[in-house]
Length: 165
Image (cartoon, rainbow, N blue to C red):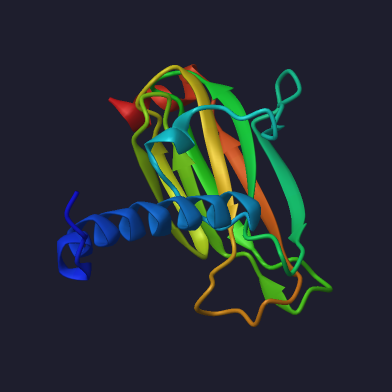
């Protein structure tokens, strides 16, 4: 058997290192709740907090706080294709930082959102479960508790018709 040289092992070591870094990065993302938003993000999780509307109610507010080690909170609600929706984020009184990024995941996995203020306004494209992710803006916060108040308005189909035609 011939002795192995370091140059003959180099391509193998580099490949192992890359795989190892990818695995570590994925594990770290899962343990520190980093806002890694992937195609899998569209799939409902057991940790999604339900948003429910009482009969006849067209709006509701949710409030939350992200601790210094949290970067996101997930919510879910059901809606029908052609309903007009508005989702608006405002600061939560009493918190020094605002979780001001919102991403709405549609039932088909597409997404829409932005930071601050109205993050979604329009006709919902499909019937089914929608997921809303409230995220800390990592570039605009110092890692303290970040709060948010999010108002979700969803008009009934009869009131949405003229807006969604």
